[in-house]
Figure 1 (tube, rainbow, N blue to C red):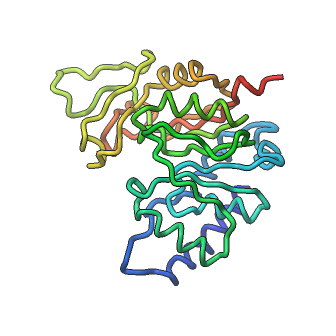
Figure 2 (cartoon, helix red, strand yellow):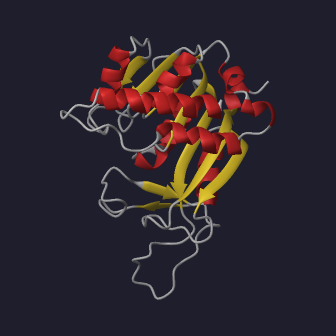
Figure 3 (cartoon, rainbow, N blue to C red):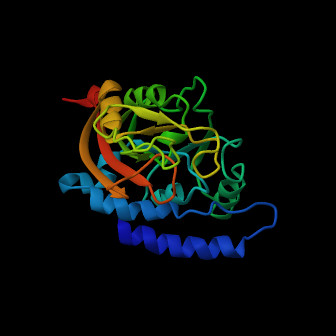
Length: 249
């Protein structure tokens, strides 16, 4: 799947260039590059994402310009996306333009995940929650809500081993073993006030357990030596495939 995704990404980039508009900027990060990390993450039968999805819908939360959703649609999946214009990079104009260009049937659901919400389906095979968790004010509520409606979930999020580089303490604090989350100041990370909770590795594992998930595959990438919550050089990410305990046989 990785090779197909990267080939689609190349073609999609050309399409975006041909549709370029001064009205809005495209989302600047390579969404489909996540398939490189997923390829390294997944083991055994977990690598067969289409089988995990099965005959149920799949959901991409925080779709950016819809790159992943449009790719999954080319594989024959019934795809839905959840995003919210006020927090989307270009207020969903990129996704809507691509959806129209490709005559796509991907279903857009505009939901504020920081409010009480209800997902459109009661059962998904697989949900993608990539790069979203640390943007949520209430990650516990979102993870618990997802565990009620999907069997599998692919998650990536930033984590940290040490406190911030700009700490006034003489020695940095290693909190990697503590099941905790660091609350960012409004512009502390990347000048982006939508960044909130940076979990430790132990904290991420704990919240997954408490919200009803079993970890199937787990991998750390980036600065795995001395990561911190905010600096560019201290960026560490956790990727994991989890299964909801509600779907255990």
